[in-house]
Amino acid sequence: MSRPIAILGGTGPAGMGLALRWARAGESVVIGSRNAELAEAAANQIRDKAGASAQVRGTTNAEACASCDLLALTVPFEGQAGLLKELKTALKAGSILMDATVPLAASIGGRASRTLGVWQGSAAQQTAELVPKGVTVVGAFQNCSADAMNGDDPVECDVIVCSDNPEATQTVCGLVTKIPGLRAIDGGKLENSRIVEQVTALLIGLNIRHKGHGGIRITGLPAAAYRTAG
Amino acid sequence: MSRPIAILGGTGPAGMGLALRWARAGESVVIGSRNAELAEAAANQIRDKAGASAQVRGTTNAEACASCDLLALTVPFEGQAGLLKELKTALKAGSILMDATVPLAASIGGRASRTLGVWQGSAAQQTAELVPKGVTVVGAFQNCSADAMNGDDPVECDVIVCSDNPEATQTVCGLVTKIPGLRAIDGGKLENSRIVEQVTALLIGLNIRHKGHGGIRITGLPAAAYRTAG
Image (cartoon, rainbow over all chains, first blue to last red):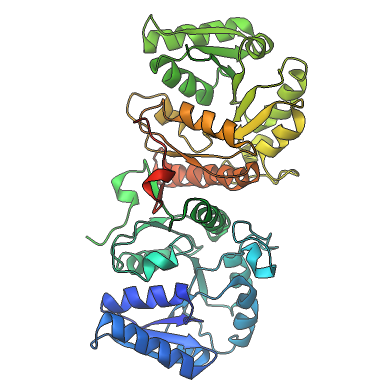
């Protein structure tokens, strides 16, 4: 049986997209929110779209951490540090925390096509500093368009997966390939997330300019570099 | 008749790749170097690969600036500011300077998968500060693998073209689409080069990790956003 996946702060578009796609893939999904009722309503929405057999429920972020050791973090940057501090005692050692956070300047009223400088280098590295010892942070999914993720078509995007723990990278690559269209690429160390995060701001700028839902594909690597569903 | 294109500091792999591809497309190319003999030898190499009818010659960087108003800058970051200062009087008002420079940490003995922070925001913005008034700087070609550009196959890469002058952006987009495989995307203002430049460091990291010649494709934009040869 596959391990349940908690989506912390999961009622926004990025979280809902992941929940929908994993639920459709037959994964067991727990949507976390500060407000358990909002989380339950979000879970109902996912069930409406993914079908009644979808294994999805909503609960508080803390309870979601307690019941899962695969966690995805999908809050806006301005909510990231606060949520992680709140969850300090709830996060279990041995958990893998997938961080999709991007430090968009929109967090402080600036443009979503610009980023903030994060002292640690990236939002993912800030997360790594804030989680308890034994929790492994993996940067992933930052470049996936929430619109595309919440739709029905395969998502035309490569997910560059960065962490300092190769086993955790492999686990997350496996979760990426549950989602039709996505390919996972091992992006090396967590510090490389800083560029992956920036790419999101570039894509947002292109989306505004050209009215699209941009993603990226990496070309020119040997076939073995791309992990796909097959 | 098409306007000749000068490639300043054009004897390295990035410059040679552009020279080869434009020469093959029938463009008139002037390779510039500090050393005119080196530039001539480089031009001969291009002619050997592109055919005797290729319009390519080598000369000094200053003479290349004098004889062309389409200029590409392809020196390593550590040589960028020095070369631009040398060429301050040679650069003509009305010229378009395509800047492919990336501020890799390798410039100061660090890793090519990391970048330096540039005070102006990006290497292209540094260039904009160093050129005489009337020269328009356009960030482009940073993400094209030199290996792929120096080969024979279509180059699987999108070129995100950034400048503060929409006409110059369009001119450069036209030059991008002379090269088989490349698509040009208007990336908006020159400041957006800062992310495009970072992507090169990400690709270099992926190349090292996976032994490839990585490029990027942007997905999910409407067809009109992609300028292609057709």
